[in-house]
Length: 187
Ligand code: AP5
Image (tube, rainbow, N blue to C red; front, side, top):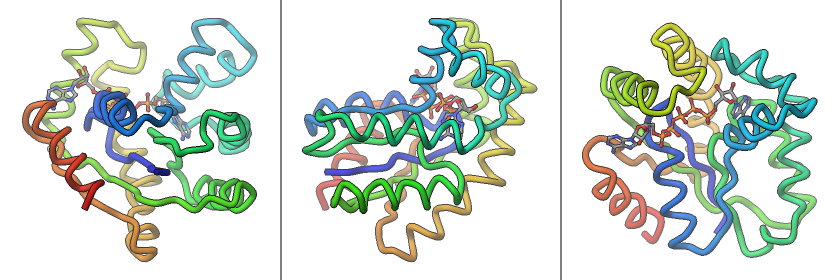
């Protein structure tokens, strides 16, 4: 299965993607995680990405697209993948289409996890206390939400038009959301 997981910051994409990818035996590919690994390792990509991430802005499409094209060319994606947090812009949608045509493998489903704004802010402020992620300050969280609404939310219309969009309620316990997701994916 080739799946895209969308949703605002704190909706639970990373948490759910880890469980669902394991369940479906496909790699979980998170652009945010790849960027953070590069920031941690101090690579050129990480230095570039950090300039945007710390402000809650998106890393430029040229950088992100090249990174994803490279990742999807790896052999572990042959039986499918779960893309967490990509695509996030219309240009990335176009690039993903090109990559998939090249691989001869269309996307199966696009899942949007929805969640209440105040709940996701509370989740992220809680994570800030536990993990100290650099972009989990209230100001940057609110900017991330705005950027999602402006640049990523409109993509749902594109995938709805293609008949690929599924919306899953991300409120409630992690286990309840996982059950909803797996049920929606198998329908
Ligand atoms: P990314 O890491 O993808 O961050 P995000 O989209 O802001 O999402 P989060 O990781 O904050 O939330 P999530 O929805 O994954 O929720 P999670 O499961 O972690 O991207 C970071 C940055 O990288 C971007 O801002 C951008 O700069 C850059 N970037 C990434 N992709 C890019 C792209 N394609 N193009 C350009 N730039 C890109 O959960 C959050 C918290 O809530 C956790 O503590 C979790 O334990 C908790 N939680 C989860 N589910 C529940 C639940 N049901 N109940 C209670 N708590 C819960």
